[in-house]
Amino acid sequence: MKIFEVVKILKADVLTGTENMEMEVFSVCGSDLMSDVMAYVKENVLLLTGLANIQVIRTAEMMDIKAIAFVRGKKPDQAMLELAGEKGIIVMTTRDPMFISCGKLYSAGITGRGVWD
Image 1: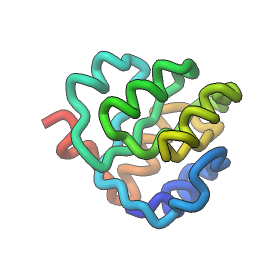
Image 2: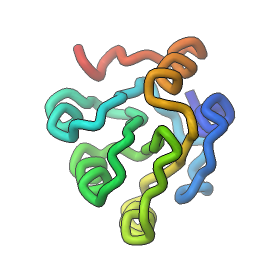
Image 3: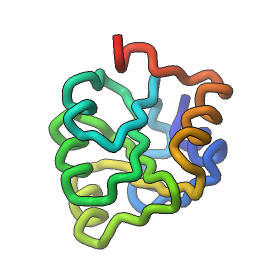
Image 4: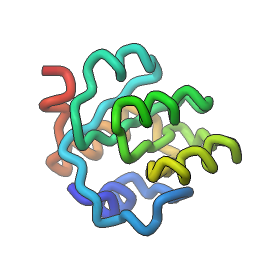
């Protein structure tokens, strides 16, 4: 699924990486625990999280995650946005909670397959 499709499904606001809307993600990882993200995430993953601190961007950088959607209306601060921009990470925010966000994406055909396997 392409990022522009994710944005439409989640009714998300894109905060960084608008030039990369054609990028594809093949699965979604929904977690507020960055240790789980580091233990299980594979490639081409969209990270959904409600944790809004710099560690999310650092974890995404380490795990080569190129797209993050902050759920529950969480907004990353300016330092997070600057770092994400430097690292080429797409950052978006949606008002939906994580459960609803995951459900919408799953219903649209994207799975967690490959993330937790």
